[in-house]
Length: 114
Image (cartoon, rainbow, N blue to C red; front, side, top):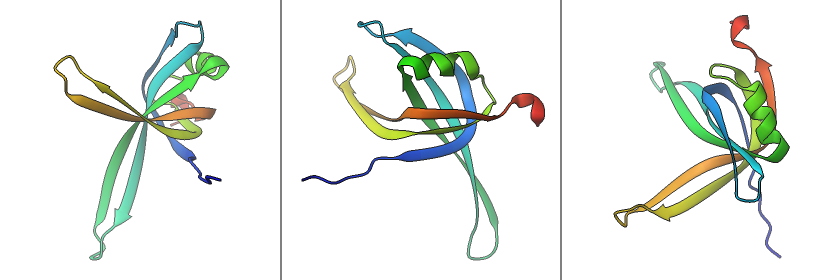
């Protein structure tokens, strides 16, 4: 029996307005990005900042909710799983994309709250 865990939880700001479309079966899919800052101190006490940008995908009813409620700059919590897709571009180059396929989303703060 295979045992594994693929769970991601992030808090960050929506990086771009969500884009919703429908797959060939009529199921809604929404894509956006989540910008997550990180701060740490090095061995000498120097402060460093880093920002990661994650692609986020939602399906079905959650996709519709994300499209209706999310906008650039909102502070949100998302949870889901990592998924990596691969494809060949028009020149035959192998491409890949890792994204968060979310099954939970919660708005934590709107942009008017600072």
